[in-house]
Length: 410
Image 1 (cartoon, rainbow, N blue to C red):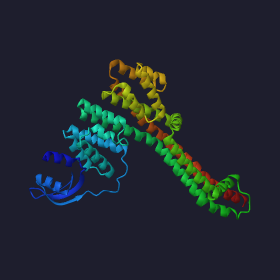
Image 2: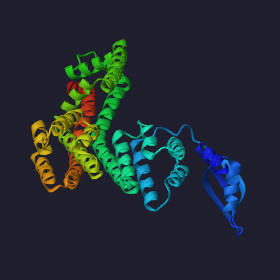
Image 3: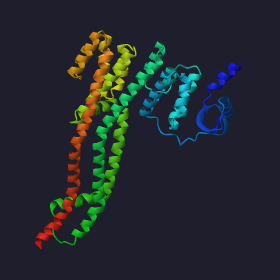
């Protein structure tokens, strides 16, 4: 009966406590521990030979922000490391949860721990949180549980999440730098047009002479921005931007069109292509190594590519493979993958080492993305400086042209 009541109590969600006390040698010790309540924690500390002098709940800093894919990648590695060290699953959740600095992530881990203590399998507890753990993640964990090799599978999951997140960061780096500089250039130009150009405009009114066409154009642009037309234009741009992102999230046809266009953009397009191929190969390698049948794995692979064009192609390949077509032939039919990738997949199929060959393809293209991002950054730096020079320098020249003309007349 006592055991039953204890089991019921452990289902309740634990709370993180920060404590301070003295051990058997009189030395001051501090720590952070999960417990159902303060009396339970005091009893546990006494059992460990610690006389607690102060116990308080760990302060929560706001809601703790949003749980990011990077947080899930770190959590996966921590959990894999704990299990590999022989620490039981529930205790691993307790250690990782109590030590996490982000309250939102801590709540997530403790909720999963409570579900597992309540009798759920790990993959069932993860499946209840689809926003943080996608089908691929859940399927891999389920395969590890069924095979009795959860710690090994979690290590594969952790490696997969780390590599995919690293690849995403590289692609974001490639897109962020030029976008950020372009935004700064636009902001600087607007500041000059709104605050600096009007000063020169008042000065030029005293000249009593016709202004150069270029100067007149810049002044007219400044007046338009400062007028109601400029305000209406700014509001229209904001509304257009909101509508763009709103429909982008909800319209698959729009996402497909944008993804098609992005793959054709010079310099950036090849990086996005290589990134999608790397994700395809990395996910295929991880799923196949986990023992997931190829047809079932292809659906998760499609969602992991990060591009609607490659996603649709992968789903088409899945349908062909389901009818008995070899994966190599299906890849050739979609006419999207480089010949090297197709041949390596063919070798993997022939040798019965599809996971190993897919992993090599992923490693190669991840390195290609890294090199391409570095090369693009080197190429864009002088180009961006030239664009900034044209924008800011053009405005400066436009304002000083009348002064130069006046000097020539004098």
